[in-house]
Image (cartoon, rainbow, N blue to C red):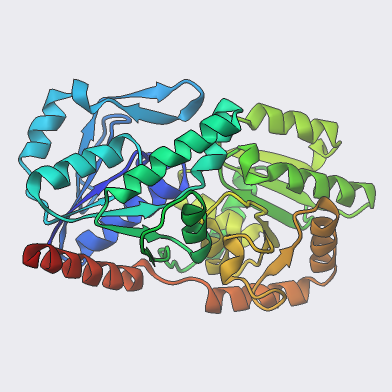
Length: 385
């Protein structure tokens, strides 16, 4: 099978969608299929380490979202020539924007099926960028129009499927959950991370991994940590990632007087360091209402670290409160209470982390078996029709 994966986010990976697409490409290729990522160009580099092809096109930084590159495929004739040489059996798009429309055009020209996965809460993105509810609604209308052009629509969780329906999409949606690359954690990675990031005390560690963006509800973490500090509870707050609000988050940390407890770690490319942080953390604190099926909660579980998530969020779909993780209200006081109680009984919290490891992570190989079966069904169906 020859599959084209089209995405506006890829290497170097700075968000969850990029990580999902990378794992789709790598796992599918390792299963013996031909997989090609069609993505914006970030920078040149050696690609022999990848088991899949990459066809990229010219891109420029997005001024208001500098962590992203906006692709400009019409200006890249070399890209068009390379794409014309391919003969995909199916196209899978992971974005309703530039790369997505490239995938739709390719699929319609070649008369092959196209799958579209809904990953993100785009209304929230549009509202943050424009500050206008009217513009955000217009934006979601465009998103719905895009998914109406796909032969089949997938969502990464029941919560995300409900979000797409709330935008006005009325067609069928197949839920295909995200997996993760289950890893054996080397105990030395924890010590390496502690040394690398100069964490010189033995206070309990609270970890957040994700974009430094207030849409991730990071302020709720800072508010809860301010309450920990006020009540003389020792802690380290570790924030890993980059994004448009990093300076504002630092200002909030100063405002809440938790500078001595906080570590802004930046974007972490080295996998051993990232998993070292997951192992170092006593709790993974992820109060995001924005994310759909976040991989970071699964990665924390793989390191036997329990997560705290918001009740009713997409993240909470895989959490059984008090069994393999913790749930709280979207309220700083409630988050504080859950953190305080979890830190007061670390033996029980670690047992919950072990349950998280046993119940939450699903390897990408298992997910891709279902994906490949669905691809084949759509290819066969398309040929019959």
